[in-house]
Amino acid sequence: MPRDQKRVPGSRREPLANAKPAGEVDPKHWIEVLVRLRSRVSDAGRDARLMEMNSKYPGERTIPTRESLAASRGADPKDLAKIETFAHTHHLTVREASIPKRTLRLAGTAADMCRAFGVTLRKYKAKDLAYRGREGYLYVPGELSEIVEGVFGLDNRPVAGPRHRRVSRKASKTSRPASFNIAEVTQHYDFPQGLNGDGQCIALIELNDINTHDVITGTGYSVSDLRMFFKKTGVPVPDISAVGVMGGANKPGRDAIADTEVSVDIEIAGTVAPGAKIAVYFTPNTRSVGGIRKKVPRINFSMV
Image 1 (cartoon, rainbow, N blue to C red):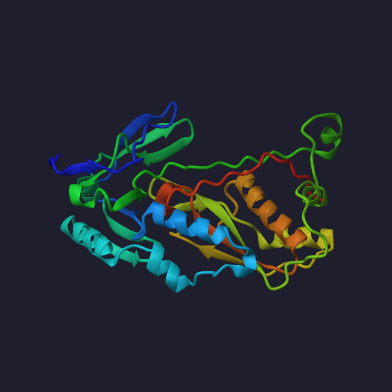
Image 2: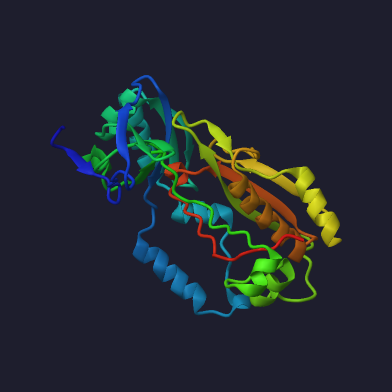
């Protein structure tokens, strides 16, 4: 490895527990990664602005526009240009470059990705889970070490799993934890009364299952199931739209547990705020979208 290469902070990976190497990745396999860049404003600068805004009453605060946020907290165009040059040097294609997001989407063969970031990709197997992974740190040229905050997508192991448990009404009366219907959930979270979400849009993040070839294999909601649920609750079916991010899609049918979690998210939102639109964002269950990790409270829902 060239001497001018430096580690990408926080990029160290170890195999999942009980995972064993299961072969090499095809060097010609096509991979997309997301490179996250530093902000043009330092952490200290952002903290100072946040403290200044929080020191004022809501009505006195100046809410920044999208343009001003992109200018103050987005990536520096010079940094983007350096990453693009780095990508082209390693035969990688720039699919998207975004100043506001501070990201670049790069695509290329597994062989070129490995050479670019100084890693070796392998196939791993752990019980019924197979994934593409790596060990150790990622590396970038020294001149980019202060620019690159993360590279996501080389390792496609799942980063989250459903924490859904279904309890029958009979069992919930005699055991703990109890099962809650949606009305009880809203009471526990002290949801305000007299509001129905008119004019608002609720965004839900849902994670797709993928295989070792980065192909979406499942997770989603069934429109017919949702219609049946809302008919039973007496609530109109909300305006629901599925939005794919980084190749994500609404694809129910393969994993009943994951599908149930997606449906429950929509059913709760649609019941407590029937006037709101619901945008369901689907994305692969990997770190390819910047390390999003979905945390779901361990609550048991009873279906009506």
